[in-house]
Length: 217
Image 1 (cartoon, rainbow, N blue to C red):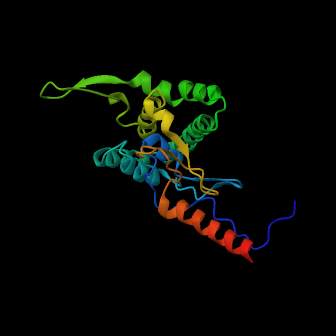
Image 2 (cartoon, one colour; image 1 turned 30 degrees about the vertical axis):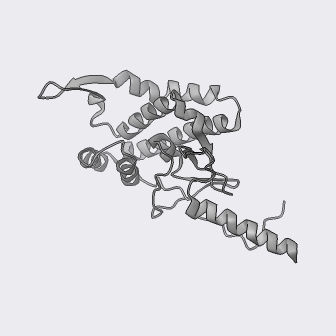
Image 3 (tube, one colour; image 1 turned 90 degrees about the horizontal axis):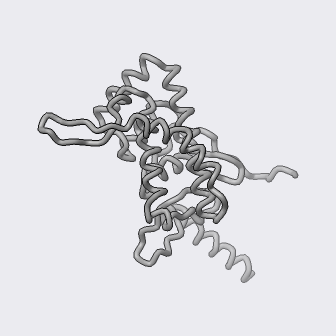
């Protein structure tokens, strides 16, 4: 196949591209840290452990105190930090395959098994109740408080909660060309088509107007 002329692909990695939290769940927002195009992954925002931390705070899976602690740990062990970023990309891929299967009506058994046998097993194995000074109990991962994988453990747990909830029926894939982002459609009429109206929705409307003008000529 001859390459298309005049097409300049976006860079695979985009360390300055902002994170967008439009999925309605941290697990979906992790998948939405890259564009899933027909040409492959583009505009990958997870370019380093600092970016993973930035995403984790915005997604609500870690807080500022955790960021400070894990940032120090990452600085002292850059090899482990790079490995954690690779783990993040792997979890993102597994979740995307699950979401793609569920939104297209195909079999999700294999990627669900990958989630079960991977990060979710790590999350469930470390889950524990802890008691605060006033006696209040909370559920968390105290043994992983200093683990560079903590944001991924929490995200895997949130993914499992989403997949086992009624919201899984509202899971949608954006209708935008070369987007591939997902979201939970909590709109009143259940007819949301776009990850964001001002991006994919606007582009699609512009494309349709251009097509109509071309047809009229």
